Image (cartoon, rainbow, N blue to C red):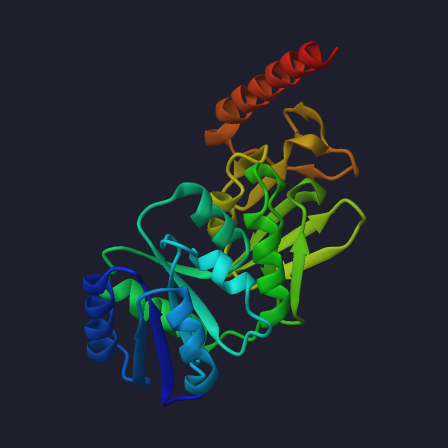
Length: 259
């Protein structure tokens, strides 16, 4: 993304539009032109002739929300930053799809950090938008697919196919059940938070393991179905044991329900 950028703010709240415009003007010198729209229809009218580089899009709006507006478009010649009050499921879908979001009221430092990420982004826009629509259509967050940005391109992974994740500085190695490996350009901490609730167990500061691929737990560590042994740190042993017991109990209850 080049300098001298054009931004479009879409929000049904007038105060929110004005505040964000002031923050962009004060903190983001790369943005030199700003237009505002109070809703989806106005935004669509602006889009064709204004051609923004970045759209700051409110999720919840009357008539047509942010996701519905995006789905109505034919092409995506811009980056999107979602702006929203806290909405756990919407935010989780956005993060799984590798889009940025800003919580209202927008924090200046978060705004600057978001812009820095966008300026260095090389992800395929059409594919990531398609993936976002897939995730937002799911009623169960466990069915979200994870978008992984790598130096070679973007991968879309079903969390159930991930055997384990290993930290490597500011990178994360994903080991998949088919033997493939994907290296993400983000630290493990980012994915630990994302994959919470997807039956992953943090067994070491550098390791996150899918409980579905654990064959045995012993003093040596976690033995996985592919034969890999993953170390369990001393301080995490009790938590790992507790997590495994809870997962076994939950699995047993589910078997009874479906038996």
